[in-house]
Image (cartoon, rainbow, N blue to C red; front, side, top):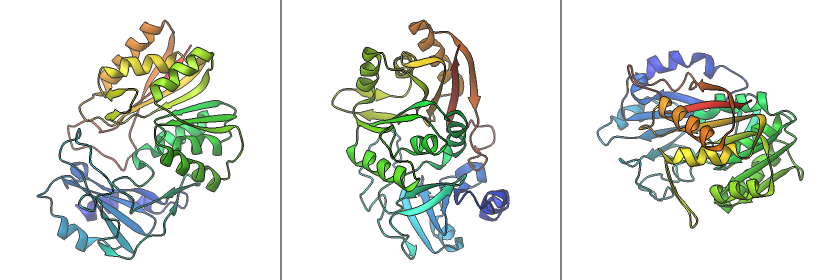
Length: 312
């Protein structure tokens, strides 16, 4: 399975402008329960099933270092990603990667931290969506919700966005976003960072009459802050409506969900209901495919659902 996956990823592996990608994607590459991400000369192995043949895979990987991430069995179980039982801070094979390690995606630099918990600082399955943001962002005012370490904001700023606003509940993640902006050479007061509950932030923007030309909205499947509780599903109707209230005419919303229970059709339907509830007119709603290095198992939908909504 690994040999076949390497053949399928040959083109990505030999690109000078992309140094991070998925090498092995679970059942989509005939290896259920295991995934492998490449970050320059290092690899990150994700384990989703206790019975997956991990030892054999580790023996077959030839990298300077290999990190391990054990995913909880249930998606709604929130664990401390810094717990060594789930994500050892040291590599399980080879030498440690620099902290941070700088990878490139379409030529844009991003800082990742392979030993800091279950996540590395960037979601590789959003690579093509970040390219879409780069295409749409020049001269535009961009809002990035649930911004994490702000990769969407960095992509937009690097492409020439007139302003970016990154919103996240975590001060630590926003600080990493600021560092990422500096790494990409995107500094200045036009790029702001707001530590807040995203729903409260959207209400505040609407109350002040602030609008944006491009909104990136990639919420987790589950989240909870002091101000709100979010569960992917019908909650998308309210979130979509809140986004559309601050989206300028002719503006674009990129809405994404990695909830495996949520179908592409349902995400589109929830966004349609949101548009009806707010009274805005949608000119186009387009499904966005996953990158080719994230193939789903035969007969199954892709795990990441993305929609590009454009207002009239």
